[in-house]
Amino acid sequence: MVVVPPILPLLLSTLALADCECGYSLSTTGPSSSSTYVFTDLVESNFACLHDISKNTDWVRQEFNLSKSRARGEYGEMFAVDNVATNPMQIDNADSGRLGAEGSEDSAGLQLIVRRELVEEMVPVAEIDTHRLDMFWGSFRASMRMTNVSGTCAAFFWYFNDTQEIDIEFLSKDFNTTNSSYPVNLVLQSREAMQAGFNAALTSNFVKAYLPFNPAAAFHEYRIDYVPGRVFFYADGALLAKMDGPAVPTSPGHLILQHWSNGNPLWTGGPPAQDTVLTVRYVKAYFNSSTPERNRDWASRCKNPAAAEAVCRIPDLTAANLSAASWFFSEHGNMTNNQTVYQESGASRQEFLWPKLWKLVGVLMAWGCLLTS
Image 1 (cartoon, rainbow, N blue to C red):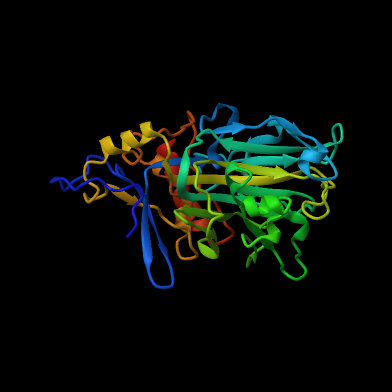
Image 2: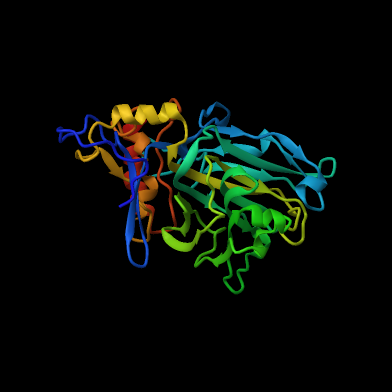
């Protein structure tokens, strides 16, 4: 068993003072063995309930320009805060199983918009980053629905710098409904990629995987598990790829959600023929902090890692466990002590609905919304 960071010596107590006081765990399974990892910190963002992204303390909307040469495309890129918008669901209190008019199960969430009209030879695009920059190893999950409009790149990634980066990227121009071909690009940006002109496809750290579903038709969870020496990529809990070796990052970083286009025919294509949206329902990040202060906080609260509920298992979304999508430790009273989690005043919980299979769970979670609002 591998535990990150090293667990403190066991004390005599057999009960934890608070649930999850020693962290949040997951297991990875290899051909001949499995490893368990414990992460000390979390950031959980339920964007389906978020009403004002400008007030959110976990995320920062980005505003900057890239020239054509820096964007490596036919056009530059104009990142603007106005291209990051919220579209929350509302629950009708008179009927807990019914969605209100403000959002719908098809569109509710954080919207990252790419505009069709150029501005000064730049494509208006969107990016939002975590406030926390100290994410050193972790499990990072995002529920997203892609656009079906050709000409953009949707990306969920962990980033330290251009040679230490873990990417999940979708090119909408590559989606083909006629033959059900839906590729996703899984990338470790590295020094090898830099030497290849930042074309990771020319390195050993690039995998083009094909999804068994249309990522523009519904929300699905995409996940990166970044652990010492290895990176795992998943879609709805199914393993897509595993990478190891010197390209695995060795520094702390942060998470980025991005939706962009630069007109490069070898990558994004575009710009899109119409304004187009990447919608993000949630992000869940469980990780270790690189800061001494956060490590001291963990050491002071984790009195006995062997105590019942001292370490909480992270629910993994799979075809057999769709309800994991609606689980947030930060929405339960005694599971995020000493964590800094954003709570929007007056916001309520909302289920993340996949077609048909999620309807019953949605009704149950609607009751949960009422109870926690």
